[in-house]
Length: 404
Image (cartoon, rainbow, N blue to C red; front, side):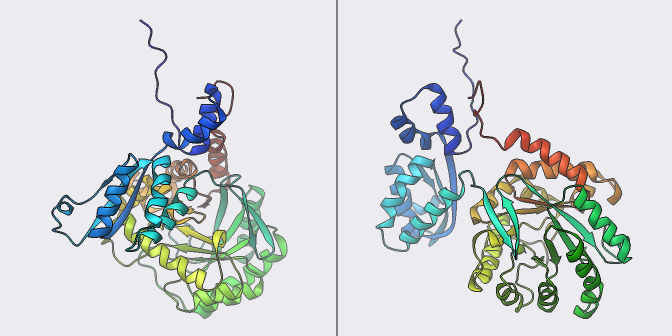
């Protein structure tokens, strides 16, 4: 019996759809019209006023899609509801002009939806200026190497307190292909004791100045203290990595803006209670992005980090890992830091020094999810795993012989 080779084809964006349709031999005009119909999207909005929800539901139905709302919307027994827009990229694109002319804040939703749909397509190659040193984004996943000059970090505390050992380790990571060095001088493991900004800078200064003379890759400083960041940037550091997303020290955003330094804003919170895990995280990161933008930073200069291991249970960390691609919603580069963390140890019941394989698995998942930078202790092993994963997923599906 003839089956006609029926099978499911994986298409994640409009570019992949266009390639697949081209290989069928479709007319170019038809391809432009049909490609967006191949990509299904679910777009969530939270706490939408009732009248706005009614309009979104009506307009989505009018373009052939749908909108999921609270069951009491039909009876007007709620004042607000979460809304899930359900449709193809093409249907969502047709929705935009319909709501841009509507009142009640729908014009803003239309603009935001336009930007989001653009963000979800294949990212173009970009160049990130790290205060004079360039990083290419989009071509491949970059590797950030961790170097802690602390006595109490959870993984390598005390190992690189000696300046020469720290320099040797940094140079080894550079030789292994690291793209960025990230120096930390205060442990941020659970239960850590804070150190003064004077002590943090005392640990950082000699290593930072030595590395700036010896290495050619950007040097990032892992700190949430504005005065430490200012001293480091004045000395020539290239990036600031703030585990509190510019929200702990009220002067941090001003400092990174003054020096025009790229900044990594990480999600963090005290405790592990959330209303909506991903929604709350996105809102926190949006606040961090706004703080950076108010100081003149924009686009790729602001890098978001979901903060695996910070303010989350193991189960919450695993859910975030399963939904990494959703952080593309924010429209900024994504950094993933899972190296040797307790999520891996608790999942596999392994000690800190036995978590390499688990780390590699999360790094590969990061590549598949489209993250831009992976922060690790073991540079060579992660670099090889990432390179292999990229050989599989970086090219567009169907771009080679046989295709879709």
